[in-house]
Length: 113
Image 1 (cartoon, rainbow, N blue to C red):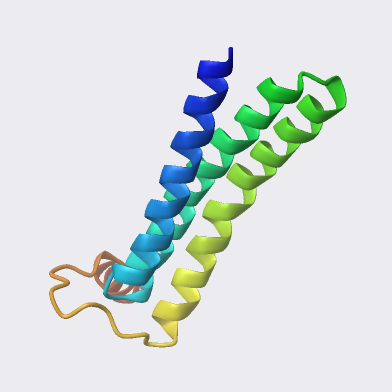
Image 2: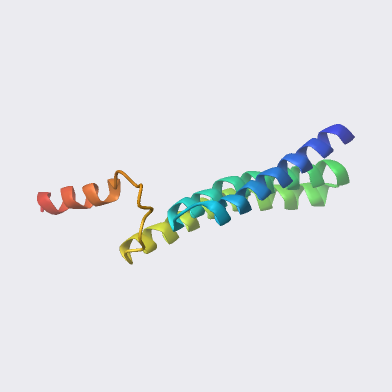
């Protein structure tokens, strides 16, 4: 059991480190939001699971499951809304961005009406 706990905590720390590295290294806001939301939520989940298995308490288990549930419920939605608001505020994309699917979708909707 100690090996599983250690692996979960190490994986959680690794993914949180990768999320921080992605936020630091990625070129634009949209890529940074992707790194922060995906890797950090998985890393946090691994850390919380490691704590749950280590403490083996019912209250800690319930609180940990609630933390994981609300993290996966709110983090993707929040990052999507931040990215969408940034897009409409004309936050510049990375220069190597090839396709803008939201712009083509918005233009298609304008042609219909």
